[in-house]
Image 1: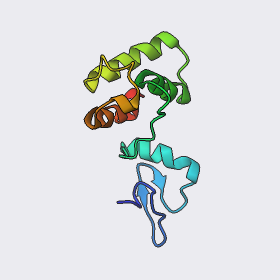
Image 2: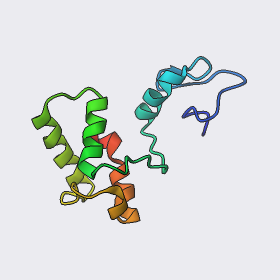
Image 3: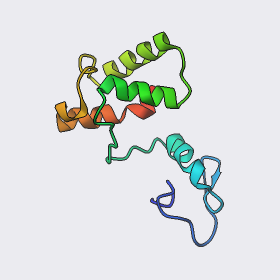
Image 4: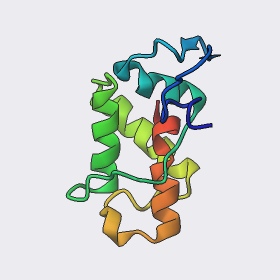
Length: 111
């Protein structure tokens, strides 16, 4: 499994998954492979100095979103989907473990 999502390199043979060649996969392509696979890691890597909304805004900006109104609409939509519509003002350490896990699954939803 780890080879399929590029956590371990393919050392022998050939491997292809979602149009990626695992033998020649570049480090820069790993996030795109994982995104296509829908891989979600439990190592949350949240920005602890930012609120839930600020973390989501960071992801949107990093993926090319520019329209502030569209970003706010998308953040509201995603937080509603994971049952956190009223939690955008909270910081990661203020969320329960379950809420943190639900919130951290948002990258695959937000795009």
